[in-house]
Length: 270
Image (cartoon, rainbow, N blue to C red; front, side, top):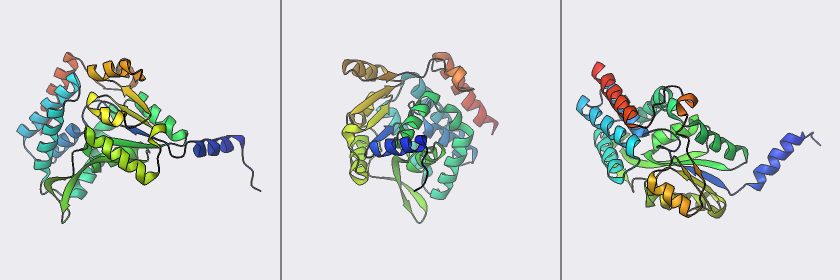
């Protein structure tokens, strides 16, 4: 009979105990500061995929996103623009792009507190999934880099290895997140009443209410109010983030202006 240390036995028992459980994390402003798609757009500009005017437009939308939080119109505007610009581009190219974007831009934007929560769920034997409107190729890279179970993201139509500029199904946002998590739970035999969900946005109420343990992270005003009214836990990792993550800019008017100027300056140098 093989030797089993107390620690390994305890870990095995914990994993069995939490089978059928999962934690679902939004990405933008929850797992990381700002919008991941903005960084993809900036990298695409660097690779001459589109123009300075397009890049400046993405920079302005990113500034608004950081300053006022997630807005349905902004999300659809950014996603629509990105899909049109991506038409004719290889899906393999976007996957490679996602790798570069994570290593060069996103890794420094990850909230240490949110990452720690995800790791605690993994240690407890729960699955951990990202659920985001970001293209699934990019979401998958983020999940892999953070050693998570997987990612649910917006799926772009591909024909002969190239993007068509159309989306398969819905943008994974709002009610679509709730439906996606419910479908995943059926496939993975998860008990949603014993699962967790984390988001910063009131728009993600369908995701948060799909599980038994909803949590607000860096919440916008509407979600903070809703969370308080329903006695949901609230975590805000935005205060003190300069010390936690090198180079992370505060989500204030000054930080937004700096970020906008910096982003446009960088693309102009190209």
